[in-house]
Image 1 (cartoon, rainbow, N blue to C red):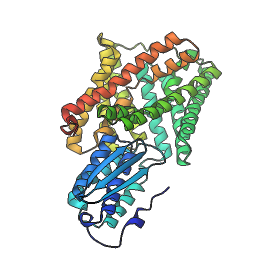
Image 2 (cartoon, rainbow, N blue to C red; image 1 turned 180 degrees about the vertical axis):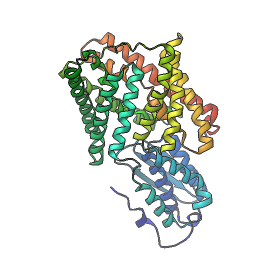
Image 3 (cartoon, rainbow, N blue to C red; image 1 turned 30 degrees about the vertical axis):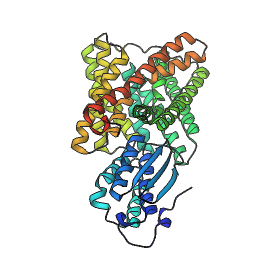
Image 4 (cartoon, helix red, strand yellow; image 1 turned 120 degrees about the horizontal axis):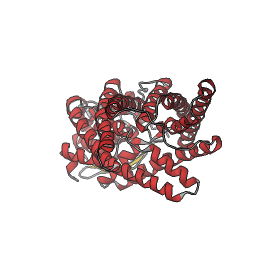
Length: 431
């Protein structure tokens, strides 16, 4: 149910520091649930709640999940407990940036304000619309997936078809989200539309230009806009900080989205006789491939950032991080004998360190910079191939692809964890 926060506030105009415990607790809880709604992990939500609680002179203990918070605020002789929940999870990096700056400035700018006035400011933040329209978000997905499919080995035909398919798929998904449709239906419908549009455009190109049918393998790239990057990464980071409830809930959510997306893609592939084969060779030298990978990585990360509602400056910085980190990862795989999982660790570590330096200069949340820059490293092609072959009862081949994808997925957050441990003093300690 919608919480009308203003109804629980008394008529006194005392500052927040002099307010009753229940009003102080309402601020702590509301700031926590707003942070949680942006998609950040439990550790950052708890840190924000603790910061506000200290500034208000109370002690806070919170148990945080994927869409709910149970917390208690204490004084010397009183305690106040609340349970807050969200209707669904999501990602909004612009709002997360606003909330982190709000928490950072709370002591100097807001602690002296009346509680009612602070809630009005939070009302404005909560009601703030997204930066991008549904069409712009669809174009962001189209750009990201077309770049993604090139980085997987696809050429111009696969990129064009993926651009159209991903754009149509994410447009459909966003329209359903705007109508508050349940998550699984949004995911399934978006993937199905993306695959169908890829098929239609490819069939049209075949009729007009007699292109090879082998370009069908790029249809996997058209549905990679549903990769649950934020839940995957934050789940592992939460587990690394012993936030087991949040970590396991986020991991379950990410697996649910991934399984539904791959199963829908598999069913569509069976209906139209698509197979996840190898891409046609592009005929590029190592140097040419590297030079093309840099802008492709930038465009892919920039597109994902748009999908996550990042402001333009934040999206550009994320794209620059991704251009360096992802190109480094791919070149290590191609030019050395390093395994793909180890290269993913180095790429994520590079992204995490670069994001920390940018965070110190701009104040942008690290998670908003790092997740888009390593989502493009998530092995969506491997995951899909695993499900495809397992669905055909070819368990050995499917298990091989599943193992490869699992290793890469585990090493990505590990790289971010090590980067955070090196660059963030607060992250190094459990208390």
